[in-house]
Image (cartoon, rainbow, N blue to C red; front, top):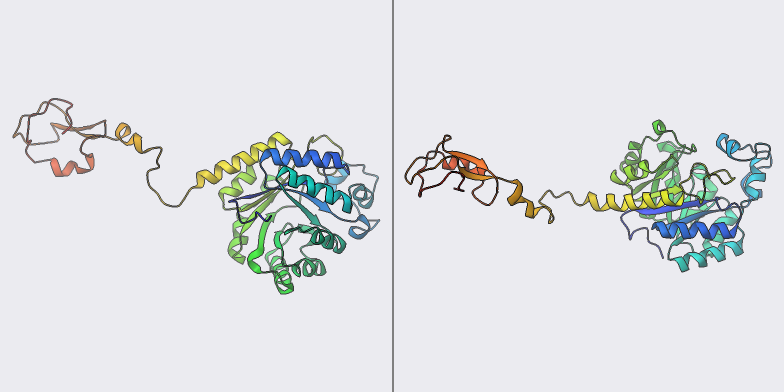
Length: 337
């Protein structure tokens, strides 16, 4: 079931390739994502032979977190999920009541996920300039989450045009601001650019986060993000390219909890007393009070009137109305007027 439009913030727990090729670990990741309250858990669907050439180098962060001697092809070949694994994980997600997502990285993978009935497709940052890929996904008219790491506005506009001209309704696209460095330095987050994307393309926007910690996704929600994507793992010390820059289960839970609290706290643009604070008016506000004893017929002046709590009497906003008028009765010191 497509829940993209049914929650304030659609939270994608990005398992990615942190299953290390193990279905058992993949299921534990699903358990952790469901327990944290994420809306979806996302994996990656690819064939190494179709994704990278055998001579392709690893990214610098991958060299630091995996065997530096092996090629990128050798590394990701061990992380493939075959068709049967997809069936098993989709069934497991249904049992755990969390949406299964996966990012396709080649045409065969796009078709596989389409055949498996996925209604939301994630386009990763690295494919935003892959015109044949974009046209293939666009032709399926799916809900699309488009990551924009490394891209400028012109490239993003071209990608959106490719998707829509191929058949995707524009309103089905959500744009994610992203930075593809793992982990992303705080100085490079440039979170305000996320709002620029929404304004430039008049589309719902979100943030795919690769920073350490959970502060930035929470800030993104406060700035209007409707989708958050964040890598997570069972253990940051496990071998593999993405574990070190991922959240552990307790951190994922803390992030989801904080985001849901922010959603509640954002409320509406209407400024008025909240139900919980109405009762505090009589305690915190003040009233007109006799500063000293006042006799009936005596004139109210700044010398015999003052303002004190509680707020159960006449509002001091009416101060000017009373100064210079006559007391209609006797007042004792501290008595409400």
